[in-house]
Length: 114
Image (cartoon, rainbow, N blue to C red; front, side, top):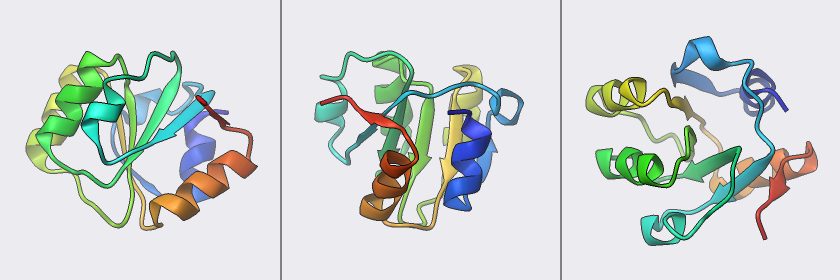
């Protein structure tokens, strides 16, 4: 599924990576625990999290994750957006809960990693 389709499905807002909306995503992982994110070893992954801070961007960078959706109306700061741009990441803000966001994406064909 293309990122632009994900954005439309979730009625979300892209805050970084507008030029990469035609990139594909196959898998999704939902977590607020960055220690869990560090254990994920899957390519083409979309991270859903409510943890909106610079550490989330750093953790995603270490885990080779370049697509992040912030759920529960969380907002990316300018520092996060700048760091994401430096690392060619897509950042998306979504008003839905993590549960609802995960369900919509799963129903639409995004695969869980386990």
